[in-house]
Length: 203
Length: 137
Image (cartoon, helix red, strand yellow):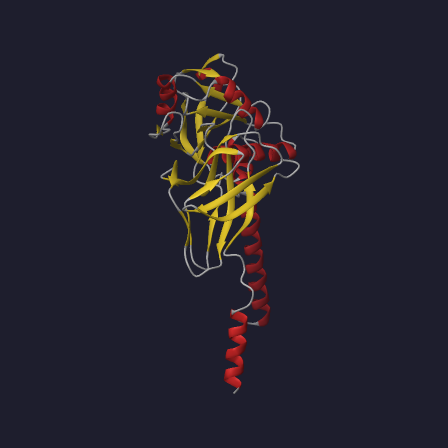
């Protein structure tokens, strides 16, 4: 190859590489990196529970906003407050970015025996304003958890001293009341901050 | 001659003032969330001895009961179990952290600015530590 041809070939190669790079940037798939998206949103099943103010609510409580739903209990000192802190921190980070579309944080108690609405009210308030707590009868709770594939089981214990095993996932419910996506595993603030705007259609 | 000097030096170093048998670091105790009466404790225990140290109980005057727990997340399910013993390996450490082993402090009584933890091996106290809550907590 003559020096001139070599120069042309190199220029072409650089141009091609640059083109591929620009194309890749323009068409970079904006996809969640942590959340698992459901193939199609699944309607939240019908249920009747109480919110933290003791008011009866049904599945329509999940309409009108994006919700981050965690299933836990207030007598859980480790994973439940840690997860709610992660969700609260992620919401704050999104607010600090100037985003107006912010998810609501929802704690569904899997320990309705101990988690009264009054107790839930103080608990969810601790993690910020506008949070929702749900509790009620085991039967109604199972309608909600069963329909969403959430597992929980009370472990044997003495009297008031027992723990509840429960799914650790955080569910994303869309404003139409559809189970839209799921965060599983170790919950990390950055994962929510990255994925939520994508899931909520903000970018 | 040179070898014996080195050996003497090694012996002197080995016989230097011993550190405490058991040390605690990175201690954090959460304040009970309003409406609840329990806290969690997270820390690292380091054993400076050549024997395993087995923590069998922890006492705190600020709490009615303290248990050693372990949270595991398996197949997406979070489980919490009580541990009968917390073993600190010889010349090693054990880490208590969120989402893993931790202290579960129950039946919180008047909690002021600090919490005292006393670690026992059988009936023998092996470590006592005060934790002062950060001002902004």
